Length: 158
Image 1 (tube, one colour):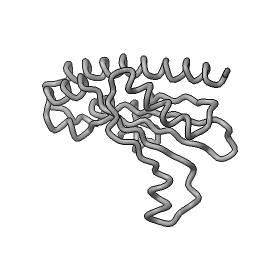
Image 2 (spheres, one colour):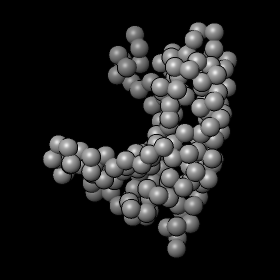
Image 3 (tube, rainbow, N blue to C red):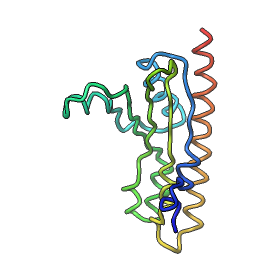
Image 4 (tube, one colour):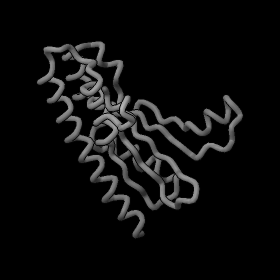
């Protein structure tokens, strides 16, 4: 029986990164985007999900939510070297969102490379290369996350 069938999250979800920022939402989105870019992630797109949902479905009660879609050239290269079809699991996405009754802005990231590993998307003979990819992604995102938390505290102190 899989983790999903048992009702518990898979390791990828358990290992997701989450933090909060004490700054306005409209400042948090570009702040998080820039922290990714400073670690050499390229921004593919920033999308406001709440605005898209309101515009297309007319729901105006969705909390402000932004997707920051980024890709790191080394991660992309390594994934394509393992199997070109893995590019379909990229890029990486970080979510910035608000919650009703909470004055903080939430930042959440689930690893695309861990999803590749946990979903068994890579060829069977690529386990070592996938683990290397997960490790490299983890190292890069650790830098991004530490900077978001550190610089976010500095911003809140101002």
